[in-house]
Length: 249
Ligand code: IPE
Ligand code: IPE
Ligand code: MG
Image 1 (cartoon, rainbow, N blue to C red):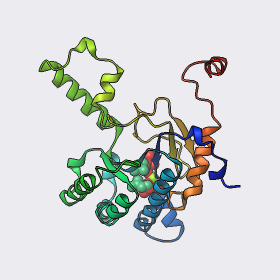
Image 2: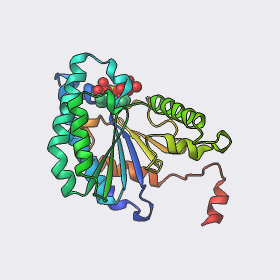
Image 3: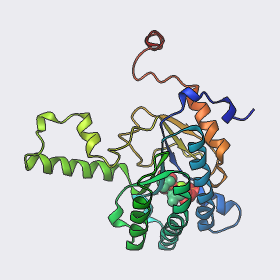
């Protein structure tokens, strides 16, 4: 039986985040250039997005390019930006056909102008879609996001729009790039690395973490369903005891 058939349809996470890792190693294993791996990785993005739509995941956040990834060789960065523009432009019709709304989190202003424009266009063209929200983390890092939030909070306190006594965790939520999205119940990282790499540090506070050895270009729909299946077997306690959870039911 497939993992999809074994899923409990009443326990589908609302939001899944993925650190799509391993493109370079996938290509190098085949004796190819790293960029070939990034190109193949686009197919896995389609797989994950389709899989999310099929089971009713409402938000899918994909870590596509980190603040630190700017430090890669220029040739690889340029190829990634090029791939991004081409993919976004090519996929917008398919996003609309599948009722997918595109969002971006990260420092959009740091992207090449053509890239930023292509993204803004696709965000606008898909804004009425409601089935799945696809959130691309681009030129994103959590420390960048939190630093920006703190600066904006301080500014609003200084200009009188915010009272410092009123600052609570919800205030912080509201100043992050993810303000409109629920927290991910599940984080998936491919390629065998077991770290967060500056991704959603605040938002992942209580997320379930799922690590798989599969390299991103090999990640297919069934791998996604397997991760959800694994998630569904876990007990999320949020600091309580098991007994408390059972009596809450
Ligand atoms: C993930 O794959 C994609 C990006 C970070 C842009 P990598 O390029 O990190 O691939 P590995 O980890 O080197 O194999
Ligand atoms: C994390 O992968 C960033 C993305 C997947 C976009 P990296 O490959 O950049 O992370 P590290 O360097 O292994 O931590
Ligand atoms: Mg990597």
